[in-house]
Picture 1 (cartoon, rainbow, N blue to C red):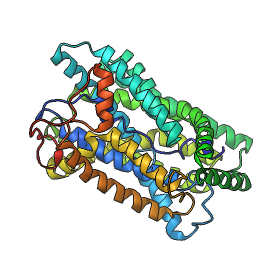
Picture 2 (cartoon, rainbow, N blue to C red; picture 1 turned 90 degrees about the horizontal axis):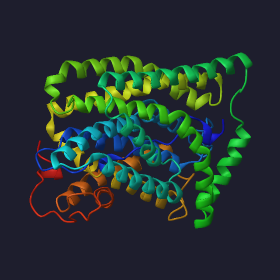
Picture 3 (cartoon, one colour; picture 1 turned 30 degrees about the vertical axis):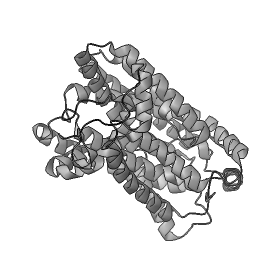
Length: 426
């Protein structure tokens, strides 16, 4: 596989966030849902910024400019702990938010489906602009498309939805397992072509450091390569997590953590048990054996391991939020305006790493890229809290809500509906 078709070594995605959740009155919104979204946003940023920083990311060939042990260690830890986990947590929250929207529509006496379809159309348009102008790793268009499938399935019984989700995961495990077996039997492919990767990386980085026309052309080429990967690898597992989230939302699973504490601990322990070995295998194959039978087997295992770890992260976070509500209140504001923050991350990274601004692609180490991502997220936490004390929605959420509701929503907040830090009081 080439850099852009390495299925697991892809940019992290997500951030539909409140793009799919209409605002609710103060005191009624689940702070835990917003806080989980904020946590997922941070994880997604740590992965995506690596793809902005270097065209070698995900190729199986380390960037020759950053071949120190510390660089390889940071890259391994990002693959092990973060990559392919947090966009799945976002997908779960997309499905969970569907149930909140249905409840909101029923409360208002409004038709749910037309409003949801308009929301998905708006999300698709935003994703298209994001992919063309800022980041070829966009998944918003996929979310919008699969949202139609979720709408079609939103009335199925929870047991049926859970079975469908399980079938999608098991199907992915077997699909990539078969490819691994075939590659092992045929003894081909035998790894990436280092010369071809270096030629691609040099061309891509030169284009991304150049002017607008070259940047857009390179991004479009990268997105075309990425599209088949999105449809083949990510679509089934994203839809599975949509369905799991919908089932959890029907059970109001995040509304009362104390009631589900034993279940949450079971998810944490079981998710780590299943997920950590798979994540370790994936990170090892991603670093050393891209485009080999071992990578296909790692992808097969990760189809099960990544959702397990995403579930463990989410359940562990809910337990922490229940024990320390201040943590949830801290993470809730960026989660409340996750779509604005996600796009803001791409704007910032495009400015830093492409010819839109500083043109530092290929010139920033993995450690520095991760540090930059953490610093950016810290800024977004405080900016989001500041913004939401003055506005009921993030700026992009405001625009998407206008499309969804076919009306102009209020721009500024009229009353003190928010508690300290900008998060709704639980």
